[in-house]
Length: 199
Ligand SMILES: Cc1cc2nc3c(=O)[nH]c(=O)nc-3n(C[C@H](O)[C@H](O)[C@H](O)COP(=O)(O)O)c2cc1C
Image 1: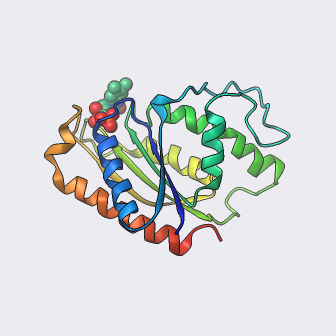
Image 2: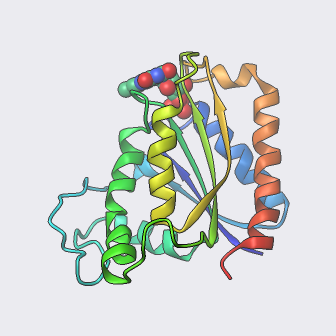
């Protein structure tokens, strides 16, 4: 069974995206997957300092909690990432993680010499997000961010669960159907990761 990494990107421990991701984690575990959880707000992670200390090795030079996250990101077969929409993109906690993965971008494109658009994804990602408003463009920004983040990780976006119109911490609890969908997505993700994980 493939290894799944679940990353909680909301500052709220019991917020809407966290509750959805918890369901997905449970679904994946019930399907037999090994799932490791990381709560970004519990970690000490500097933003990227743009010093390119990664340029020779592809490993970030800043010695903080990102080092352990990097190892787990590299080793997993599938990533479940949950972030609320903050100003039309991911939360600051999630963005710090993404920016620190510039080290992986450097490894892929500068050190290993990959050509953009010419590589095949070897891993899969499930993305979960919630925003307070209901506009049609609510998730447009995050989609672009995610596309290039996943490319850096050699991942394809397997599925997104995107929900509008929820603002307060427990709002998701009024939508048991969304929670059920998250559980089912986690369960099915475990199967997809097993079938088509890192070859
Ligand atoms: C700093 C900040 C920025 C936000 N920006 C947006 C936004 O651009 N669009 C939107 O619809 N909701 C926005 N929201 C609302 C959150 O997306 C919403 O409360 C969501 O349910 C939070 O999810 P969580 O409980 O998982 O943290 C913002 C909230 C905060 C605190």
